[in-house]
Image (cartoon, rainbow, N blue to C red; front, top):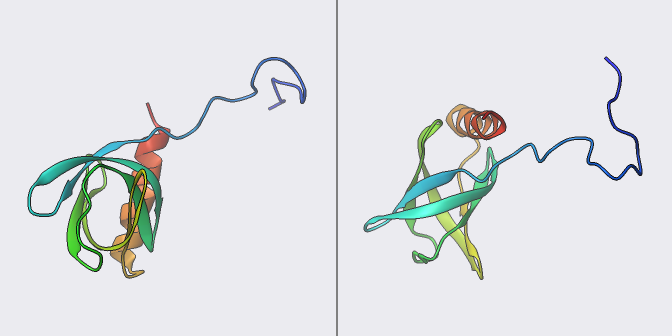
Length: 103
C-alpha cells in the first residue's frame, strides 16, 4: 500500500473524488439542481429557481431518496437548504456522498 504519486510532481495523485450529482428540487414544480454540498444539517444546490426564504421544499437525489428542507438563503449560483439533524438526514447525506464517490 504505497503512494503512487509524489508531492510536487506534474501529475495529480488522485482525481477529484466527488461529482456534482443532478437532483430534482420540488417547490411548485420540479426543477433540476446540482448538489454541490451536503451534510446532515443542509445542502447547497446549484439551481436557477429561487423559492421563497423559509419555504419547505423537497430534494430528490437519484440514489439517496428524498428529503424535505427549508430554504435558508439565496446565492448567485443557487440556494442553501437546511434540515433538522436527524437519523434520516444523516442517512440521506451519507448515501448522497457515497453515491457521488462511485462511478
